[in-house]
Image 1: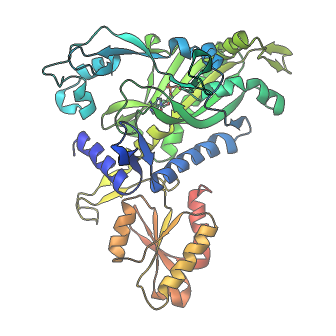
Image 2: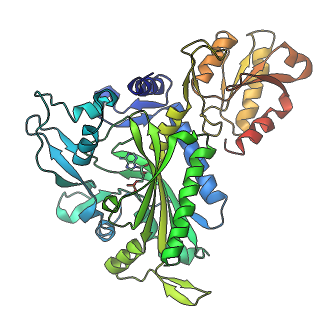
Length: 459
Ligand code: GAP
């Protein structure tokens, strides 16, 4: 299967089975905007839940935060986003389409057969031949809005382009209200907005997306910064690997000096081999004391940490692991997509989404073998009990058991539970594993525990 076909199949499955829909479809859609359906919203929640559990719940050095999307505009002056958060824009003099100059350059170096529809549009001009581009000029990516009833300069506000700044502006609040000690982190998951020049590739680059970020505060020392930088690169990488991402699809790339954001002295990207090319999943940046010092200067308030041990007062350095939730979701979908060639006991063309059980939107499907002799009642009461334990389950009594398995394989459900005649005799059910297709008998009484053990509490 070529890469364009793979993306098309994933987009189509995502819509057909309720993972991701094009946004505002009722009104002709809105380019590059998406809504997450019943299964997609659950899967996305699962990614965030695992992240929160891994980096907040399980640790005593990281606390959580949920800051506002719209902040005082001075925040963005201080952070440097108003001045420097821009991408180079070129416009075709013939068709007036606009693109990111660096993306056009990248695409020019690729072979024609590898290009996605979006990438081809950067080369071929609908007015004929190739585009004729203007000189590149900087375009600020911040989304502007207005607070209150007047749309004048005094009421201008911005939608946050990263969640990170809400963490820096609450640094002092967190110090005062908790007992964190350096090194410590503040974690946040939330929406961010960027007026991207060339969004595209499904949910990979959109104008509205979710980030999961940690600002990890450390002693202001270059060696400490390097140590924690390496530490966070490994931690973020393990996050994806532990959730089943294939090792060969994950890469680490250190930024060239010329690519560094205005706040960073060193950044590495964790990249994924997407069907449309190797692209960024997450970034780990050494932000030094840049942000806190900027906020000290613009707010006129001290943002320092008093170190009991050294009895010194300082502005800490920061190492920031930052990942995109939507991109993680796309990478997990791509990684899990498996179309049978007919040699594994499935018919050729049948799709199995080999999602890690923690990410699968539905954990178990419960089937009565037939719709009679009380089997549906037993199955339904099992569904009720599993739901009471907080496990996402799906009840299905329609069609053959084989067809019911296929419907669940396609959405990544790891376990299918069948209530059969033996259940009535010995109170056991068969549990069929999505990946091995092996079946085992488990006592009805133990089924919730059996599932829980395999999910380690991520329901
Ligand atoms: N606070 C640092 C920061 O925002 P970034 O590399 O610009 O760094 C972090 O963004 C992550 O957010 C990226 O690695 C990516 O996963 C995600 N991201 C950024 N722009 C995005 C977009 N337009 N659509 C979807 N995800 C995006």
